[in-house]
Length: 443
Length: 146
Image (cartoon, rainbow over all chains, first blue to last red; front, side, top):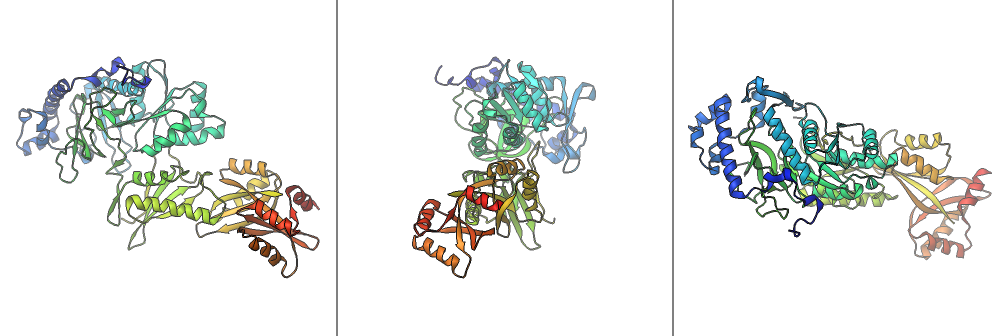
């Protein structure tokens, strides 16, 4: 046993039982639940029924897990088109909670939960926290925004269900975050990785050394981040930074989480069935191949999602995890096809720029990508904040830094970008998801 | 012998220079001399003040990136060829000047120039060997008072 229970974070927690189901049993459970959710959607959601009928299939045609490919996909637009309640599979009398997206690109999308959905949500969040080595006795500072956004309440009820102590501070007010973290002795924090960087940056200015606080874990999600970012965050605060994944359309946070191995996120497959597809052909690809993550909710009542296209790019691991969990792992999501921008015909993801910048010693992960068009050609300008580590007092030192950074970017994306060094703190800090791309091109 | 110089990174935008100057003014710190090196996008402000530690503290608190470098201040004869004599010494010692700028005050018939050398210790030795007067921090601040 001692071989893989080598870390306190890997200790088995009873709440994580379903993470260790024997694979054959797990597949049976998935099939059983999949059939039930297809039937539930067919019976209660007109859009889904119509799409099944167009394909000439009924729930009875769904006999094995391979039959998932018969089913139509669901996309974000479907949620907008049926705004607000068109995809609900439960009557309002059974729905106890609504959440909604911010709707920055038009109408928000709305999601719903029954009492049972909330119980399942809390249970998967509990399994996330347990995978991060957290338990009763831990003090979890929940800096995800409370309200319509699923992050705040999702993490909140999960932490309570675990039996941990929750500090429901919500997002923002960095100085107070740091004060309470110190005074209450928080042992874990939940927030976006970019917001945690803001905390890391601010703490010394308030005379607080995060490394000396009881804080031991960060549960970071709601935006893609990179391995390089983890390498920066962990020593600065002397914590383990774990990646959590989820999306409102599926349930909110709690779809997948890293274990103590910090190598890939375990998908809670007994509730969320993952497939990876080629986003061009829409055909499923074998485990290990990169593609778009497609998820089906296996137990959701109020708003089941069948083959929901997440737009997140990842790959499922083929090998078993040393932690012993049998639920499959997916590679951390460092890019979304939504975030992708096309510049001079090349697909570029902000995470590639981040990776390139962090590869240069001493740079901070504070950057913004500005896209412009002078009427003929697209231009990318990457703004990077100067840190004391990289600031030299001669022009040549700074110009070399500029060259080094733009060469590092060019190596990764094969496009020459303009690199602009900017003053510290001049790039706006977010208290939620970081805004990495500023697209000023005329549409 | 060496003098502490503060350097700051500034974006090349209207109003960027006034911010650090205002911060120093509010802290009651007088700028003895300064220079700005600039490119189209950014500039580096270098300045010499008496209480450089306090200046660094207030500038950093205001959000500036501040670097401390050691520079050398020498007396230069204020006549045609005065600077050439100094440069000849540096050149024949095989040393490199990264940049230089002048103080606004002069002492008697001499100007005072600040040099940033890649190797300040070797430069001081070479200049002193030729009896060039290097002005240390304490002496420099005394002269400013006069």
